[in-house]
Image (cartoon, rainbow, N blue to C red; front, side, top):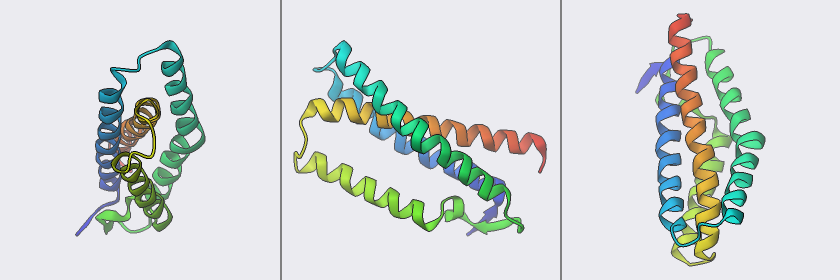
Length: 139
């Protein structure tokens, strides 16, 4: 199914919001037994690393890539490139394995998933912002 290139930004927003919400939800549900100032600080560190070093750059990169497409219609999964899909599959698989095989203590899940989920959710919000900004510009 093909969609307009601006719709790719909306799809990216929805995918990232859902992923971020789900991971944040897992982290926060696990957090209830581990709320300390140190853990909150560590969650902020995880968030900062993922947001400033990875996701903010990724949103910019993919927004620019999508907006620079010459053709108007594109396959709906083209909101990411192949490399990003491979990274996403790896992250999902690794995350599920960590939880299902109990490879990390709950405190790690609480701290790490809360920071990571927050950064992913913010990426979804930024993709959504870029979508509405693009609509407003009429490009």
